[in-house]
Image: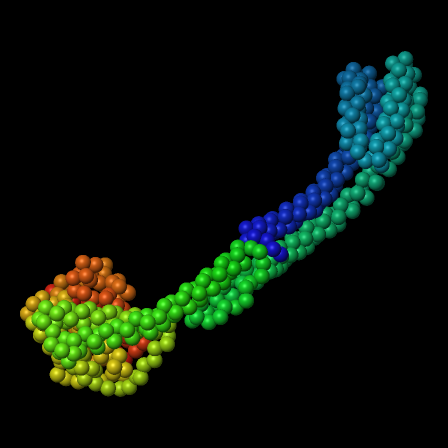
Length: 477
């Protein structure tokens, strides 16, 4: 599905909600059916009770009339009249309301009402005869109406009992259906949630994993995996990622071409110029006036700086591109330190800075030439920033897994916020000092890259007596 992530998320939320709404609706319907069964049973019991009450009132009315016939007590006559004029009509009205919704109840009520009306008429005729003093037909004439009423009541009660007898089983079945539906609904809800989560997660996670793999491939400069499918944000991001990778490849090609141009078209002519200036300065091409010789010396120095900068740029590019190979061997680090000190000796004499080399030896696994390059870069940096007449001291120490070399100077030190930045390209303590000391800002960056190739490290700390301490750690055998 070519849907946006927001649309997929909306589906992931809405589908369970719709399912839950349907589930709740069906459950409510089942519960209502169970409730209707209980209401029907209670209604049936109420109908039977009302039927019995009506029967009792009718009997009571007949009894009150009989007592009046025997005693001529007006109290019995009032009770009789109250039953006929109030209680029986009220119960019939109540009966009519209760039985209006069910066909069999409505038909039963109609028969009961007719029998009751007939019975009332018979009772009234008997009352009139009693009032006239004729007592001979009282019981015989009302018996037929009473039997009709009893038959109508019994017929309705029998049907209501059927309803009541079936109600418990119906209610039990309804409750069991609700329980089964609850279990089934919960199970389906869980299955639906898991299925949707797996579906969407597999679609999203698989493509995200492709993106992660492409990120690692980009770091290793390997070809990327094919573009992921879909039209959502992940697919769009992957498209941008491929475009970015292509742009990086193009930039890398341009950089390689530029470095090749620098290496071939700049370094070679500069080395030729350097050689020519050296010959001019030495007088091999003829004696020069003092001013001209001095200018030739300045030009030679600047040329040397340019060649050094080009060499450093090429070195750091090879290091970062992974095309730099070390010849790792076990050896004495102090020998490389001494060789680096010899290279820096001229610069140190110019500033009247002494270099104190450790006398004890310490073994480690390293590339001798590249270790010397690291020491040269760090030592030249220490000498440049040391005050006139200062001292740069080196010490070595054996640790469990590393051989540690410390190079301490008495210079201005490195602020805390600069202790990481000075190992980046073209970074020093300050731009003013970079110009003042004539550094390229690449020496420490190359040193850190070379130490990383050695599986070691280089850091800078504060010198308790003022200045900085560069700590280099080389792996031991």
